[in-house]
Image 1 (cartoon, helix red, strand yellow):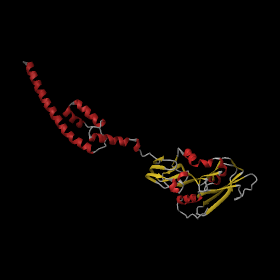
Image 2: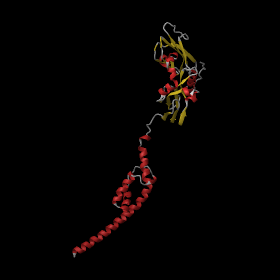
Image 3: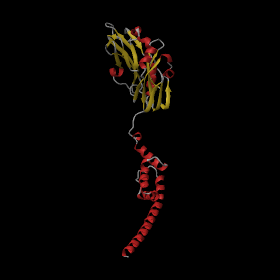
Image 4: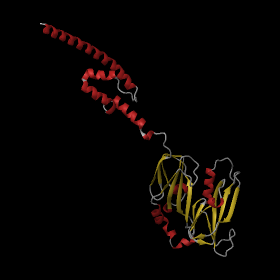
Length: 324
């Protein structure tokens, strides 16, 4: 009799306990629905799922589904809200979004022997070009061609009015900002087919007649002497801080058959310039005086070099005109 009464009491207690648990779960489930809606509107949060959110899932689907849904909120791509949360966290943590990135965001593609396509952004572009001059000799040119904003295909033959069939692009210099000063670019990209293109388009100039052109102007202030000489004399033009034109004609020593000479290294820095206008080679016994060399080679790009200096100086003074 006592055992029967005890079992009946236990059964009544279990019924009441289930009613309490169901009431608690229903209340938690209602509160979580509101909280979940607010969480989705505030996208990009790293906040962990709350206890109420878990309780709501438990009330609907049971404990096994609770564990899955809690994981899905952080790990799966199902659902617009959860996927947006995850993607935004990934982008914020991505090294590609780092503020520490520096340099020029551009790519360079050499389309053929003389044309180049630049994709990206840079403040200035400078080209190094070899070509056949009107007198049949090989000339070189180093000159800026403006900026790039997005994508630009550059044809140096058209830019510099050169014959396309004998024009070879050697390299490209990219500058984050101007001015474009030769040799001071933030990035220099060499044409990987330059040698093949040079041999194909200008190779005849490098054959038996090479001794007739023993001086190569690498840029406005640098030359290569490919013939032995007892003495080499450089003639330069430059401008001082006030814009006044100056000239120098000075020997720089002998050449042993292959010597590269930089005017800046030989004579120091200049306010504006310098431009090598002429190179003279002297054999042994020939007096070393300007204009008296055994071989004299003039810079075919002197005018363009002067134009480049004018375009790239800060404009604080007017540079005196010069004729070559």
